[in-house]
Length: 58
Image (tube, rainbow, N blue to C red; front, side, top):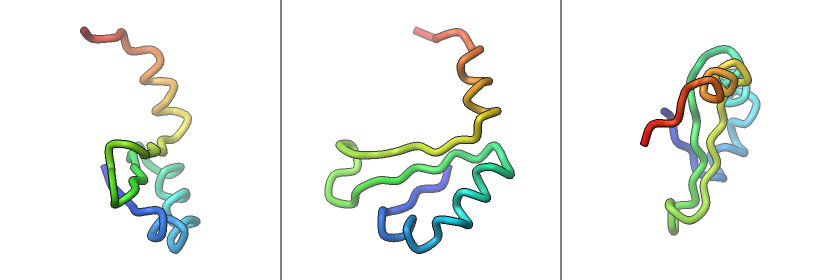
């Protein structure tokens, strides 16, 4: 999984989105100050559908 800061994401937005669509890669966007507080994960729709079908592991 690749990780980007918000600034880096803005700089490379179109390439990042193309990479997400073209592959099963997951990409995270995290704030540098506190990475656990605010983050976003980008995945393509096929991968999302796969994750929805998988049973939840406890």
